Image (cartoon, rainbow, N blue to C red):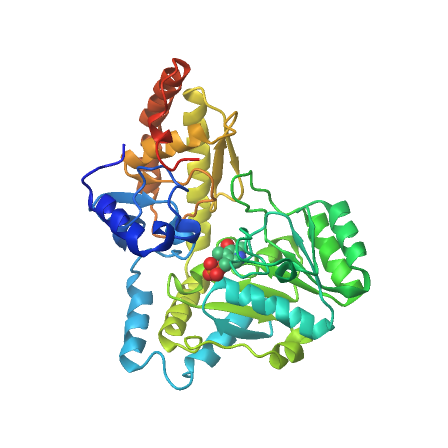
Length: 425
Ligand SMILES: *Cc1c(COP(=O)(O)O)cnc(C)c1O
């Protein structure tokens, strides 16, 4: 269904000439069905328009940053106002102190904050802080958990060397015995345990955190003097108005934030407790753009909405509605969906779909009906979505499931799934 004469197609061809691989990272060519647009023109509220002007209800929310809607008037007004006063200056504005005060007031474990630009800055700083605090080297983290694109944690090892990943022991998320074994192996050298707030790995079912796993991580860090780090870059403020592990009563020493804390404006943060303050003050961390005032103004406006609006209750309810409705429609059409993770960050995979053909096909059919889903990465709900948006999205799958049924029938007859052209996995 690739559209040969589209603007998107033209941009892809031009990109292929001047951008390595035509695109990189999670936007790399071929990670999504071939008919998915690669380029966009604009966003408003819960919707995005691709480069050819087609509008979609966007269940990716920029892979997390969009929490209150694209172009949120209040947040963007704060951003633009500060832009007029000054953004990248010789030093920070008072907003930096206000933002640190606001973040530490909201996140129970946190007594201080350091602001940066990307989640990777924050997770890498957490690693450095833990090593400075403990004067030890080893980090325990879970197989398959994403913590960013720096050499120590990048999922694809091209261009990295073994020593980039030295002094790390991987365990299995939610597996207490595996965590305990990794900690035992680290012995006297344990600097930190990193944990995702829930299992949100790509391609596989998500899983809520097992409180026993979280408590064991807490207890082991307490016992050994290592620091417990919760990487809340993706889930932070979508599950709670506090660190996500506050929901299971476990407080980390450090937490990392990014994605939605300024509703799409570039800022991230490392938060920590007093225990780690001295170490955090000892490491050298900075960046040309880390003191920018306009994203801080946007973050303050976003945090105000987080504190004062019922966004969390609304997106939670919408997520549940979507999950229930989709499950009903799938089973009515004779498909078994595995829907996992929190409703506000849903992932669904088809049963019996090891190569994701059904997922790719279904996503393409939904895209053609104006709903932008993801076949293997968790999705996101945002507070700009309405009951009507979800109801509309739930009117869509019937036709998409019918089309999927037809494609499977055709496939059984030996014809190729249309969706499996070009880059599909
Ligand atoms: C996205 C993400 C990161 C990295 O954040 P960037 O802003 O892309 O550098 C780290 N951890 C988690 C859990 C993420 O989802």
